[in-house]
Image (cartoon, rainbow, N blue to C red; front, side, top):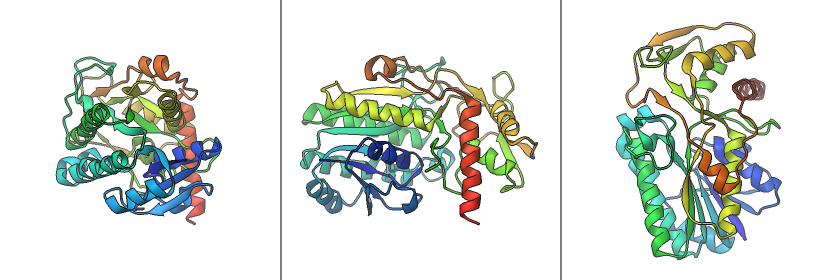
Length: 328
């Protein structure tokens, strides 16, 4: 029996694959390598280059490897791009996931774990946002993910499949053992961009919006270490295997940091200043987004261990230095 990890060569997916192989699971990775890297995949996993929208390929992998669980990361994740190119997001994140889900049902897959997003909440009236906070996404990225949550909910009612959807807040950091991290050069994650700027890979970085109704005028986000996020996936898999009920769970720490606070932390870790310019707001960015994550702790038994912004930044900074050495 194997676990199929889609997008397992990407940032979060590659951490998932290492976590699964570390615990002795048989893992098959399906990734089209459009943004992922083959070298980021654990050598103990089987990597298949292909697309989740390829129904014949998905069906073959489920059959050949006796896939009993799918952990689904593959998709597009850049909010501003989703505003500019919404049909790409409805194709990659919703349409192709429907194909994957259909083949999972046909192949008798019992468990499905989905990487959703806090973007489904849009601009919540109150923070933190809890799982029962009304969903009102303000961009195609959030809508495309919410549609998949609905598909999972309906599919679980109609078929013998159970699921967990994990709503990520802002994922950052890298594997503490230095095996993988956020490796896409043009990734838009704030902490990665700030670390690249501190290391001289970018001449400057931009702060998008300084007039939000927050203490320092910049957006506030709940930053979660990627290792803690992956631990929630492992707990979700054990929950489903143990007969746990389907559900949606937030993944965050319950408190946030502003853009300027994050940049100051990167300066502290780097030990020097770097150039930051102020820029207009980007479309689709809520002023504040913080997780209410008590449900994951209570139901999944999730126990985060890396709730420290400086630790998150330090691991991300170390990974950027590693990439510089790796790429010469």
